[in-house]
Length: 151
Image 1 (cartoon, rainbow, N blue to C red):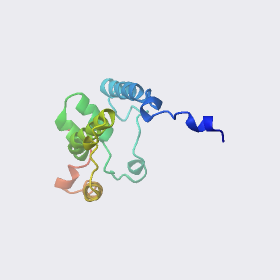
Image 2: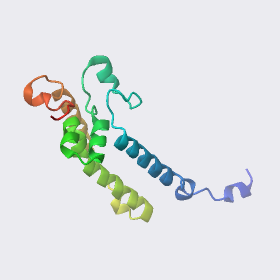
Image 3: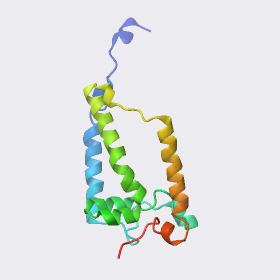
Image 4: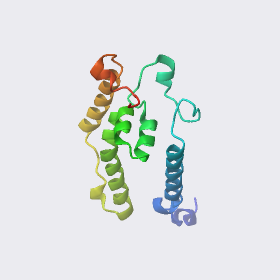
């Protein structure tokens, strides 16, 4: 190996991925616009379906999240919670964490790049599993956790 090859600088992470942020922003705005103007229903076949619900009839912890995002984009918080209350409750803290982490990476303020403790991740995963079980119990308070449309 020549010494010239070892002296060429490697592209930095920021330089190598300059295209990522505008592309991600365009994708989020495009998908958000699609969810706003064409809400997911049974007739809209191109939205992703839950394979667990399709094959077994059971609701996974994420069932209703796409419809919940559509309702949130329309400003209907109660309907979004009726579709998936766990998603609505976790969206603000996870969104804030992602925003702070990204700002920390951009600015170099690594104290903003918070790492979630392992016990919290295990608690969130366990809570999602319990939520997935409870929303499939066909008894009155638990059946309200399943995705449904408000009257």
